[in-house]
Length: 639
Image 1 (cartoon, rainbow, N blue to C red):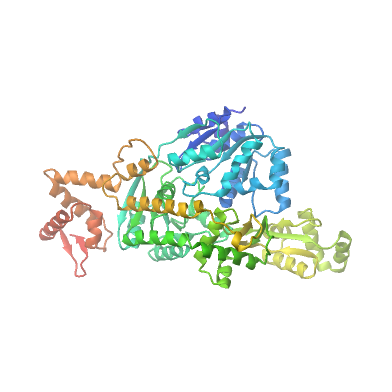
Image 2: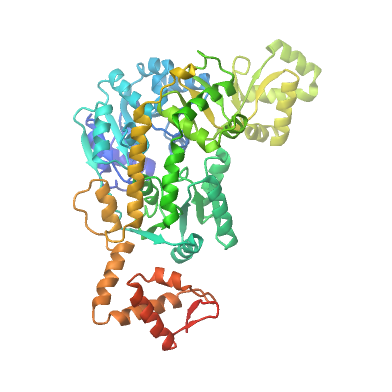
């Protein structure tokens, strides 16, 4: 067995492991079932990637997101580690080749979605593989108590039956004690060792800012903190609007959401990683798996659905250990929006069934058909055609997904595929007759194999580079060959995929389990209430609040969050020099404003927490002493 320290240095160039990583890896290498609860930024992926290289055979990694799967495989290949992923956007032939490489080749990590376990081809091939480890990423998805329950995760226990002697590693960033119990039970783990990292992030200052004008607060944070940051918004439109507003204020900002094509998302992400973009305004589609250590601030424009989601997103700040900020912008409208969100996410069951029936009509699939098929799915077109509000349709599909009927993926880039319709002899005659096409056809035949027997993925940019044509000309030639019936041509497209797990049922036979509707809604309401309580809390240390939520025992106050600092100020103001200290702080805040800019009274009160009457008293004294001045428009400046 290879030395894990040597593997870490050779492939990742890290001199040492992070806390608990080595202990988790040693447990896995000893053959023990293991559960690793490491907060965001704790280096979860290394706990299975390093053992994969130390052990013989292949490590199977189960993860719920195709985008994250692709990102990790690409990152491993850049480190010269042989990794593959199989997912619904691939052809049957591509999946077949990938699985063959795992059986007969030297693949070290195989990434799959949990739905893949239930397929016949995977079942047949996994028995032939030398599987040394099964790693379950985002393991909280297996628990109904978790904030992101996925029914497909319940199928993972079948791997335990097929691979009884293979150790399992379950990793997650956010899990309460109830969720950990569910993980152990559903995965059928055998007396697992449980490693639980602390949720303390001493370098992150957790702050809640109650404000009406969130853009002003956001700009103060961006300009005051500096460096790279993320702003999370709830909707795709909000990301675009906020990014435009920040750009208008001179901030190098861009937006990111799942509605963008894969290539565009990758380009935006890369620009942010290279610091060409300072602030990425994004939905929660952004951030998972991103390896950027120097994020100085994470701002939430609205409250997330749960503390689990908030902690995971906020934890993307300060992975390098340097001082960083996690700021939640909050006002009374947010708690009302949280209640409306839950109403929207759980449409009436009658509506869910209508969406089910409409989907099969849209796809023109009769009763009894459609099982294990994959379809391009335009949610906007579907909703317009059948007169559903698109968000209602989306949430109905998510409820159908929870009940095992179908899965809707994020937007995926599906590459161009071609296949010759002619035999080799017919093609040769065409090349003789059409000398203008001969050169291009020769290039296709030289660059790709299997074109006469199956659809083959081709890359227009690669063909252009090898042929001297422009990429646009390559696309034109492929289209021309398609019109001439020389090739079957499926052009590159970006679209979500709808994967049907079961055949179409009569509408009266469609059942939505109470656990996925009523009980799940109750859990959502409890999580939402906890998130609102965190936002409105002004007496308990933010870090203590979060760590107690995740069942840490007797955590110590952080001393740097807004609540701790407010307490410290209150203690200072009770001392003999309290009034002088407050006057000094008021002056310091006013003086720190950019030249020519004033502060409103509301902004000044927010910046210097304390008893309002005390703040106003000291401000009046500063004005009377001529150390501060109020402008005609009401703005305050230091003299």
